[in-house]
Image 1 (cartoon, helix red, strand yellow):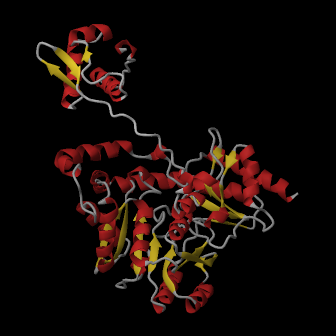
Image 2 (cartoon, helix red, strand yellow; image 1 turned 180 degrees about the vertical axis):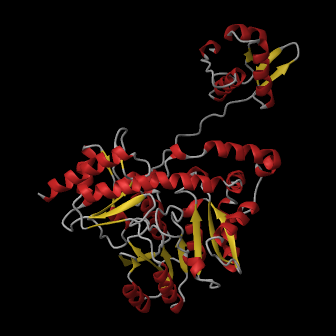
Image 3 (cartoon, helix red, strand yellow; image 1 turned 30 degrees about the horizontal axis):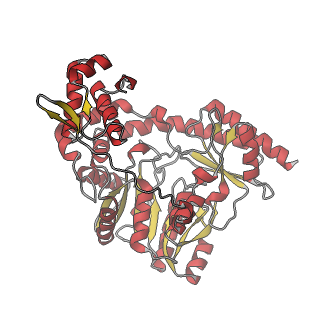
Amino acid sequence: MFADINFTKERPVYVQIKEYIKQMISRGMLQEGQKLPSTRELCEILHVSRNTVIEAYNCLQDEGFIDTMGGKGTFVAFKAVNCADVCNLDWLNRISYEARQAEQLDIMKQGITYEKGMISFTSIAPDEKYFDIDSLKRAFLAKIPLEGKKLLNYGYAKGYRPLMQHILKYMESKGLDTGGKDILITNGFTEGFDLVLSALCDKGQKVICENPTHNTAIKVMKLHGLEPVGIAMDNDGMNLGELSKTLSENDMRLAYLIPSYHNPTGIVMPPEKRADILNIFSKYKVPVIEDGFNEELRYSGSHITPLIACNGKGNNVIYIGSFSKILFPGLRIGWVIGDENLIYYIESLKRSRNIHTSSFDQALLYQYLYEGNFDKYIKKVRKIYKEKYETALRYTKEFIPCKNVSGEGGLHIFVELEHSIDSRIVLEQCCKKGVVFTPGDIFFTDNTGKNTLRLGFSRVDNEEIKKGIKIIGEVIKKYEN
């Protein structure tokens, strides 16, 4: 029996011996009271040192699986529990409505499956090749000696204070008046958005948003039982006339906007329109959730002030930020900034769900930011992504017959085809040729947009950008014929 152990190099040998014997006892293959080989006998069977076997036996005894009796030997002390009667449930008939809806809205499950070797324009995540790992390591080594033990314990629901203060100063540099406002750290944008909706909305209420808009936001709204009401986009953002008309005729609980490098269109709302939109929402007393998506990835022009900063001392804008689309998405660090009274309640919601965002991750990110690494990183990747952006834009206009191409920065562009063309049919044909992209209809609130598609270029090199877009264009031209 014991000679069957196959040791691996990755784990300590005594741990492997311990787990093997535990498994044999738990399965009933070694019975309570059964005598085990002596440490000397077992080390000869396994061809390991006696100290290794002694360590394994000591661990098993500490865990209550064996007992050593002086002068008599080592015996199994754990009695395996007899299996209960077999009970197999039909889980498919027990799945909740919310879980079924989440599965239906899950584009990772419902979309085309990526296969190795494909040219994929589906991702708008940063390319890990450009992550500044050395600076992150230095940040880790600087932080652990100072606060290592503290960071591995429970933290605070609102967040790690040095990071909170750093982000507030960062937002102040964008023009934010922090008077009367507070901040809460979240696990990325999605949790922040979910918390705000939980704090402000009840099932059945309406949320006004751009049409198209961020697919994840649509999904979260629907899972909350809310009704997204989309407003058509002009070339510079929301159509103001349609916005005013919709607000005058409907009771809107709140608004959700992506004013900079809008997902999926890539449009940047100009400063004067930001003021107009804020005035309209102020007139109807509608709170605004601002998604600070990819604000840092501008490739031309001057900085544009976020809505929350344009709002001055007003408190009706809630800003949700994240570094996930720019820097280390695996850390899942985001934040919500809003009126201090609102954050007070969101903090309680956060604490009731997952207690707090990882203090270790927050401290690591803070140290990385504090040492000035973020500015260096952004300066580097702006050049890289700008070149990819310009390449994608150039070849889209050259190879794809389309009505419109939008995108002023960020990590993607948005393509509008002729109305008679269904991008999902194009996608099926492109997939056979080794190219995938994101069909645009998933971003629309009213089941339109079938003739649109989003091309994410962040993780595709320039040569593949050209090759992939050319294939998409060839399929569309055949479709037209």
